[in-house]
Image (cartoon, rainbow, N blue to C red; front, side, top):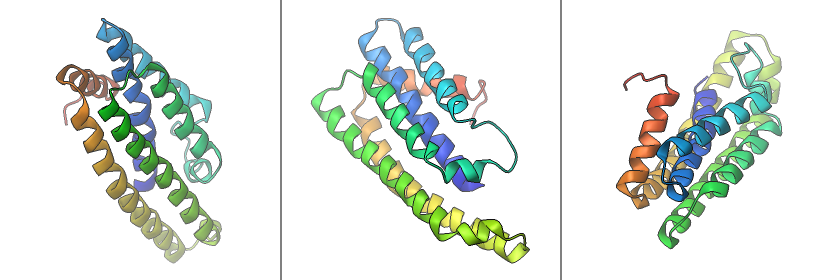
Length: 173
């Protein structure tokens, strides 16, 4: 479950980065927000990543995972106007995200037999493997994201933060 949340958040986060890029090339932040939200919606629906019970692990363990990551990166780069410092940090971030996706794929391969079992010990072992992978991926992606975020201007940070507030339906937290 936590692996699902980390990967969805990562995909949504990358797609939402497009809003910052759109803001960077547009005088109107609302265009950036709309572009980022459109990317999030498209990426999610393209691969059927809704709340369909029981199908998330199957989708995470398919090529759709890498396709969604690449689609989000490509979309964001289409709108980004990178400074050299931002570009370098962005490249490190996308490298960490891609490596994380590969790591998820490795975990999927290693736990294939567990996913087929219907016993509680197998379910707990699968949850443990997913949680460990999610923590490891987040441990690599978060510092890269923080470094990239630090390169953004105050206006770009605000645009990204505002987008995520809107994406969560205006909830605080």
